[in-house]
Amino acid sequence: MTAILCDCGDCRQCRRAMGFDRPAPVEPVKLSESTLRLLADLDKPKTERSESKDRPKAVVRHRPTAPRRDYCKKDLHKMEGDNVRVATRPNGRVTRECRECIRDRMRAQRGATPRVTEKPTPVPWVECGELIGARRNGYAGWVLAGSDGKCELCVDRPKYEAFLEKYAAMTSEERTDKVRSAALKARKHLSRILKDGRAYHPESPGHGGGQSYLKYGCRCEPCVAWKTEDNRKRREAS
Image 1: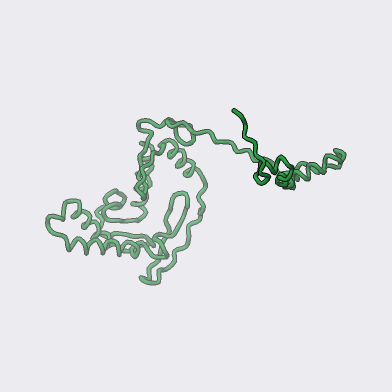
Image 2 (image 1 turned 135 degrees about the horizontal axis):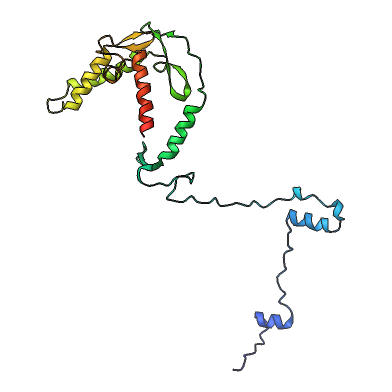
C-alpha cells in the first residue's frame, strides 16, 4: 500500500515535517519530602545521617488467629452437649455460651475478696420513716437493702399494686391457676413489715424455708440463710 504524501503545509503532518510542530513541554517531577530527605542524606557520612526513628515506620498488622468454632472463645472447652447454654439477648439475638467458662468465672468471683467487707449502718428512709438494713450482694459485699435509697417494701409496692389492679380487671377465663398464684403472692408481699431494716412477714408459717422466702417474701436471718444454702446446693449440682 502506497503512503499518501501531503504538501499543504497546514496539517500536523506537514508542520511536523517542517519542524514547526514542537512537542508539549514536560512538567518537572516533584519529589516528596521523604525522598528529598533521603537524597540529602546520601552526601553525608553515615554518622551524620538522620536517625531511623525520624522516618515513618510501616505498621505491620497481624491478623488474629480465629478460634475453632467447636470450642469456646478461650479455646479451652468444647462446645457440645450440656456444655452449651443458649441465651437470648434483649435485642432478640441468640447466643451460645460455654457453661465451663461461666462456672470458672463464678468460682473466681466467689473466691475473690468482696468490695465491701464491713456491714453498713442502717439509715432511715424519708418517706416511710423506717430503717433500711444491710444485705449481702455477692461479690459486691455488703449493700443497703432496696434500691435508689428506698427500703425493700417501698421498692416492691408499686410493682405488686399495679399487678393487682390488672388482675382485678381480668375476666374469669384470663385468671388461670398461674395468674391466681401470682396474685396471692402479691397480696402476701404487700402485707410485709420492716424488721431490723429487712422485709419481714409476721404471718409466715415457718421461717427458714422456701415457702417463707419465696411465697411470703420474708428476708429475716433464717430465711436468708436458707436461700444461701439453697444457692450453694444448686451450684454444686450443676
